[in-house]
Length: 307
Image (cartoon, rainbow, N blue to C red; front, side, top):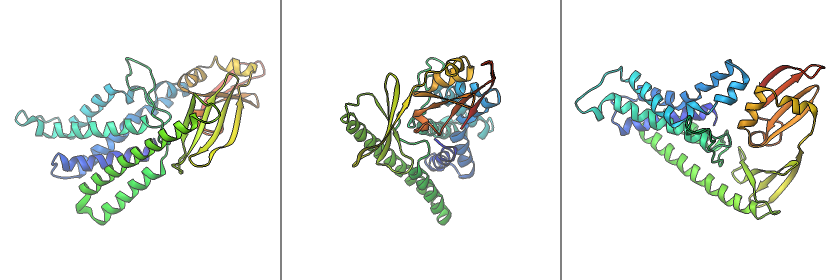
């Protein structure tokens, strides 16, 4: 999910939990919530190491169950100023901040889990990618709920806790609605054209529309599906057989990219090879791209991550 949604989810969770846990003020719980809601994406710094490191580490270590406890512990220690109360421990600032941070961290993990990119939840015990793809990477309806909540908070600042709670309830209803629509659409798509292994990618704006990706032996079939209009705009991406594409597989970047991709698709362009994942890019033109550039002797002279 996009960083703005993560930050605002953390904010609303922090404020709502502040009321539930009976914090004396909202400022620091809100800040702790925002921090917890965004800190798992610290793995984006892996791009400073190399482009391949991004695909190796993003949504892996820092998005695991173990990381949730570690991050929650660190945030709780910092915001409670390392003060422990032996008496009434479960009512101490440390336990409150730990609970608040853990819930906000779960919110971050869940937002990523319900998108097509998914997370490696059980790292380091398993590298399996978990994804429940019924929400787009950027959901306009989710952002509208957040913005509406912020506006109402400015109008009624004394009701911030209740407003946050109502916003979280509306978000839950949105999730349930999107999941129900996704399940219904998936069942309908499987009944069309004999599809059995179709992958549905939600539309950013239209909750009744999805991109359908089907992998065949020599190609990918991509189409738009609208709930009441059926399949339209069919595209076929033929898997190219090319020497440059085969050589590009020796790139560490491409190896990692293919490892995290569901539908890797390569295109040769001006002496370079561009790798897309149709799960993310939808039409082979957007999303993360692994680019490998060659010289005249087919030696790799550059490899980089593109968006």
